[in-house]
Length: 367
Image (cartoon, rainbow, N blue to C red; front, side, top):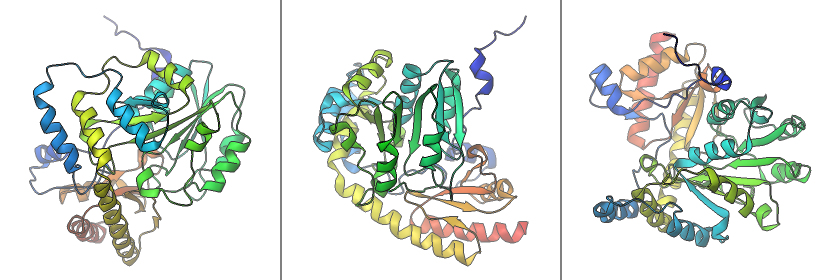
């Protein structure tokens, strides 16, 4: 009997392969002392306030969660000083990306993305049979002028990842302002700001201002997975005009965001001291990693996130595998079209020292 054929767009979809979980490495290699620096998780763990909120809500998990995440949207609206109707909450920012592609793409659409950027844009767009137009990067960063030039009459969405994953590069305020000055009103621009807390400052683009100015074609994505430390609860959100949010809500899963994630998100927002400690640690430890990478003669890209893109050469996959056998998990970047590179999460000093020691040993073995 012949297998059922998937729809035509699926032949262009390569599955997203996340960083290996610690338990999987323990099973496969029989190791017990493992450092995971592959998925850009928070080295300090979860927000303590979020943990307490989860514990307090455990007795209520027999009930379905609020499908509209009302209390969490109210908390986000207060924090961001925006209308609650401008906010949609998702099963991670990925969930909002999927809903956006489902709502705005079809087989006649085009999507503009950067060559080295988050692969879920490509996957979800291809699943909707849309054509993915990839624009080369410039010095590892997004080239907004080239992305603007790639827009055609068929373009439905442009994804702008800022700071960019996996390169860690930043688009500055003036670049984005120039980009938006000529951006067409009938194309949706999605600013994916998953690493916002590590990059925000005077020179970071104020994308929410475009909503306040009345723009109807912008969606901003952020997450609780990184700086707030609750990646395992899968919680992200989008900020956009009421018309876009209403469109996304039409196809949203009835209970996409679980009860524990909702209460954790509310309390995590209140824990800005935890976010500041996280950002401070990451900034300090990035400097340590920069010094050590330079000592080892390895080129890296200056990062505005909690990870660093490191070039180790043609044997990057072998370096990754050898690090794995030493109990250090890092992320290969072949899936990001960067086969010579590894993406390394910034950890604690103890974790980073372990990485450098293992990396130095591996380089001695493969060179």
